[in-house]
Each structure stands twice: as structure tokens, then as C-alpha cells.
Length: 375
Image (cartoon, rainbow, N blue to C red; front, side):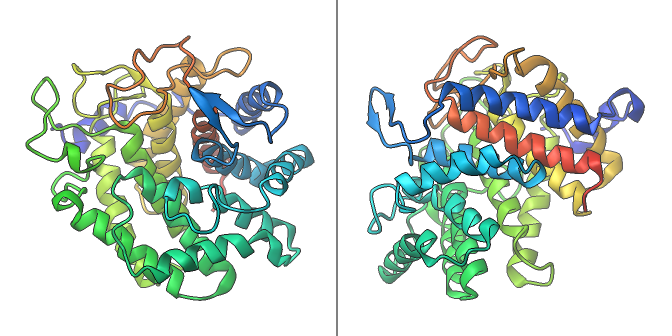
């Protein structure tokens, strides 16, 4: 494994070459989102990919995470209306109802709580079903639900958002128990504590290897965890014990991801196996940009090491992924490993477009805040 500082020395070219204009970043984010909203004009329409699924599924939930991030910097009422039409249609309820324990079903609840906070309405109907769902899950006494690392992103921020709006620490406590179980116990522990990379689930821990003999670390899977830590830490005060605990993992992961960025500013589908399903991939790249930009804004990452990297990554996404009409290239479709939904190309259309747009909007908006000087 190459060390971070080898990469850092490569990317420390003059800052002015890669400096970005904040308005250009925002306009690119708008263009990508407009493409999606025009193509999927009715947010209530079910998704059909091999079978019919309601539009409250996780892929759409991730899209709305990105849209809420865009709304945070661009108060376009159309974004709020589009979101509310969707949430009202689904009765502000997790997919498959309040008895579900599947993090994928719960993902949409993050946006329900966001709208509860944004509107300032204190309308309990917006969060009633979400809270009931989390209470039902906690009542089982089990903490071993998150057997795949994607679930950390789908579910963990929701529990902390519930803590945020209720003030009840039990939601944060339970989420941390589940996180630690996935991190330390599932499959022997899905975080490689020596490297900072995550195995996607127990199927991929050693002795499993990619064809070239390297460990299999899936770009988007690791990106999901990175994004989850950002979304949770952004809620907590810095003195909170959970913030301090997650900060250690965030810094370890940041060094790991910086060590394997491609020369062109993208990350491969298989992070450390460029000869096995290598190639540019937009969703993982966007999530890494999201985390690193946030880390820079919050003073957790050193600007001399990570700012040129973020500039380079954004330039790669903007110039090589975003089509003229806002369509995103190099988006790997749904799956659980680097080999799924291949080939990933500039023109290939993923099975679901929504989560890719959401990932991109998260990265773009956080990078915009970095360029704009948000603290």
C-alpha cells in the first residue's frame, strides 16, 4: 500500500491551477439535479427495475439526502415542494412500515426529519412514524442488524437525527452499539484497523481476495461509511464522547482513501486493486469528496495535504463525469462489490440513477461550502 504522503507529494502542485469558482460548483450541482428532477418529474412514481418498488426505497432516500444538502445552500422552493410531495405521499413513514428493521427501509426517514427541522413546524406527524419505527427496533434488544456497511449510512444518521430532535440520548447510544458491532464483531470486524479500509460484509474479509491477490475494498461501500460519519459528527458537539470516538475512525479512513486516489482524481471501484475492476467511478469518488471537504472545513484535515486533493477530485468529476445535460457518467449501478454492474463507463446508464445523483450532490455541495469559506 502506498503511503499518503507519497500521494500528497504528487498532488501538491500550485493551488491556483485547481482552484475552483464557487458559482461554477453550484451551477454544476444545479444542472445535475435539474436533469434528474426533469426526468423523474413525479416524485411519487414507483421505480421499476426488474420489479416495482415504491419511491421511498433507499436509492431514492440517498437522492433526497443530496437534495437536502443542495437546498441548504440554494433555497429553491421547488426542491422543498418536490421533497414534500414525496414525503406526504409516503405518509412520512419508512418503506415497509414501522415494524421494519432494515436500514435500507429506514433511509428515507433522514429526509423526513430534515424537513421537520427545516420547516420549523414542530408538526409531530412528520417524524411520528420514524420515531415509532426506531423505538420498535430498539425494543428487540438486538444490535447486530447492520451486517453490511452500506447500512451504516442508511441507518446511523437517522438515529442521531432522532436524538437531535427528541433530545433523548437512547437513540445515539443504540446507534453506537450497532456501529461498534459492525466495526468490531461482524465477520470478525468489518473495519481493517491497520489500514482504515472497510470490508463490505463478512463475505469479503480475508481470506477472500481480488483476482490480483489484494483485499477487496469496494469504493462506494467505504464511501457510505465515510458519509455516515460526516452526517453524524456534524450533529454532535466536538466534546461529545461519540464525536471523539468517530473522529478517530474518520481520520484513519481519510488517510486510507487519500493513499489510493487515482492520478486522474477518481477512485477505482476496487480501491486497492486497479487491475481488478479498476476504472473511474463517480459515486465513491463523490462520497470521498464529501467527507474530505467537510473534514477540511471543520479543521480535522490539513489543508496542505487535502485541499489540493479535493480540488483535483472536483475537477475530475466536473469535467469527466458530468455530461452537458446533467447526466452522470461512470456511475456504478447497484450491487455489493466492485464486479457488480460492470462495465462502468462515461455513457453507461446505471439501473438506478437516483442514488448516484444523491452522492454527487453531497460531494458537490460540501465542496461548494469549502470553496465558499463556510465554517
